[in-house]
Amino acid sequence: MPPPAADLERLKAELTAEIAAAGDADAIEKIRVAALGRKGTVTELMKTLGALSPDERRVRGALLNALKDEIAALLEARSAGLADRALDARLASESVDVTLPPRPERIGRIHPVSQTMDEVIAILGDIGFAVAEGPDIEDDWYNFTALNIPPDHPARQEHDTFYLPGERESPGGRARMVLRTHTSPVQIRTMMRAKPPLRIIVPGRTYRCDSDATHSPMFHQVEGLAIDETTHMGHLKGCLIEFCRAYFGIEDLPVRFRASYFPFTEPSAEVDIGCTRVGGEFRIGHGDDWLEILGCGMVNPRVLKNCGIDPARYQGFAFGLGLERIAMLKYGIPDLRTFYESDLRWLRHYGFAALAQPGLTGGLNP
Ligand code: PHE
Image (cartoon, rainbow, N blue to C red):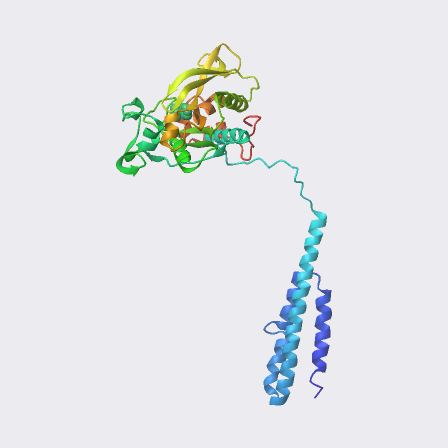
């Protein structure tokens, strides 16, 4: 009988050479099956242990187990080395040009409401406003009372407001549940939660009992609120003029402030932009006509007081605008109802390519 280790040494040398010569994962796998598989050489040698005496079996069994482990480790190392080499080769031969523009999106389109919201957030975000949110289901203290809208105000009427069944305890006592009629209740929530200085915008859904070509029972607004010790009407005007010009992409767009009334601002103004009326359509820019696009004013001291903010120390401005309205004006969409009909042909026509980046330069209608 040959010394117990000589044949194993030979086998090990053979397998080691084969593994070193293996050029890819397939070759490695073939060697593994031929050596360690169910009918492999090492496995077959294991099966011969049963015929040996206990002493011989102990010695040869240990040697065989060690051989098996060594071969497995060599296979493992070789296959990791091959994978590294393959990766290195790919890295050397391929390159990624990070300056290429994104591939055009073939299926999805961004809805004009989402696009307009992104644009407004980008512009006002650049000016320094952070996005805040609040619930669509409000109570009439947040939606009306705290905003200095008295119980007999016409906005509270059932034909304007969707009331929901039920009441709840609110900071001002029992309050009826409503679908918020504007984003202004988030002003109240923000001022009750945080101390000035505050600079927030609130994009979100709003609800009014209205439906025709320019009114939808659900629509979107963006609210703005800036509160600190020194903000004055000049800041309000500067901010909104900058916003209108950036959004419509017209550097010298005429913007005018017309005195108006809102219970929650004093003084209040409506903002008009210059336009020309051509037939039934508007052309935004220099012209002989004006078009109202948003409401604004200095926050009424009563509103500050309702939120626990000292009106002798703090002041600020607020504004609110309808997203669909400014989307219709900028992108020439004639009928508000079409926004919510989920007609893919409409979306293909009016929608936006994904990854279009809004910015101070205005919308990017491709
Ligand atoms: N909330 C008002 C509306 O829905 C808009 C507005 C907001 C006006 C803030 C002034 C200040 O009509």
